[in-house]
Image (tube, rainbow, N blue to C red):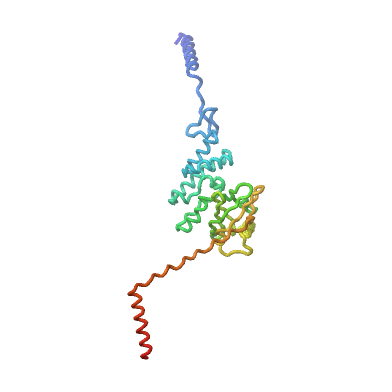
Length: 306
């Protein structure tokens, strides 16, 4: 301290010089991020993972959240994701729904073969649906399996509009032979589920809403079902969907619209029923012939005595 009681000028100059030197060597302090604000370029706020920065990273995040690692279906799932090209908000909703679906499957110990595959889930906009019903018997599980293996993917009907049929048929004509046809019903809905193979052996599964709590959806489904029945060569309504098995129908996709037609060659001829010929008769031995003759001779004597 100087005699005047003030601060020593030499001390002040030295202190300021030291502060300036420290600032130049360390750099100005970075203020913390305010709540709700993003970090500066190249930085990630503490406690938050960086968002995927490429479509490949985004798909990987969804694939891991879905967690049904079937490697042979991964290219299909990636192609479906890239075709959808979701924005950040939709991507986040899909990842959350995929994780929730996986947890639901795990909680109920659902077999992998009864779980919907990732590419079908994406095409069907599965994140907009409720969690699937858990079936307790084999029949219900078999019906449920169609969701996991189906290539066609019905979209979610828009409110107030008739539901358009969902399919994965390519543009143009696809002729299929129906291998399975069942009706899955609940208290308020019913779905006709048709499975068929094309000439190359590719399998397609198509669903038609034949019963629905919305009249316009049910009417559209009933109209499509009638079209399928007519295309299958029937001139009357059928009571049992199994009657469609073995029939050939053509799915025509033109301008995004699906219609059904009978193939130009008509329906396949029914295979003739194979009747097994009766087994050849075995020749009787001498002893058997003698015994048969003796029995006949005794019968003749009894008739004469009577």
